[in-house]
Amino acid sequence: MDHGTPTFQTNLFGIPIVFDLATCFMIVVTSLIVFFILFFMTRKLSIRPTGKAQVLVEWLMDFVRGIITSNMAWRDGGRFHFLALTLIVFIFAANLIGIPFTFVAPDAEHTLWWKSPTADPTVTLTLAALMIVMTHYYGVKAKGFKEYAKDYAKPLPFLVPIKILEEFTYNLTLGLRLYGNIFAGEILLTLLLGLVTSGSVIAAVGGFIPMMVWQGFKTFLGALQAFIFVMLSMVYLSHKVSEDH
Image (cartoon, rainbow, N blue to C red; front, side):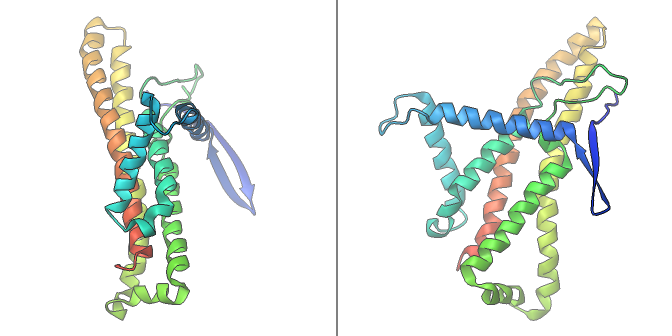
């Protein structure tokens, strides 16, 4: 079934800008879910954890710390700890939020309102672009603009155009990898859901089991893609801020 997309269009200096309202809505919902879950899990902290919530949060922080230290020294990467933690939790939640159910408005266009925001390439490419811009900012901050610019001419000056091109490929690979995996999962879940709700008992039974299996696999895939996004972001940051690179 084809779904419509709720949009809002405006102009900025004569340039038309289109907002996907469903994606904007799901970003807000995901952010609120992450905020309130972490808020309630960390509001009663103690030196010796007594609850499973604090143990889980501390494990997650140690896990993220491990991602950072596997790519750069802690003296360089410690400042990115909360950034990486926020990224991995938000992307994981954004990847999974479209799994439980799909809400399609009962209108003529069957407008899809509930979906994973990371199934939209605009979201994933924007996240990737922000991370790439951040790598340049911290690279200049750590080394100074002159020394940072010299890195593009190492080991040979004629490699400068290739290294500049690499910055664009980093953005594409970081954003499109996340988008492609989540979007494909959403499409397959939609097809299986359509099979289950087709009205045929045989189709419903035949589609229900694959749908449950795929939902479990998509949960694993959502966690894996959140990990890969954060891992690659820390790799790119280490290339800019570490003295060893």
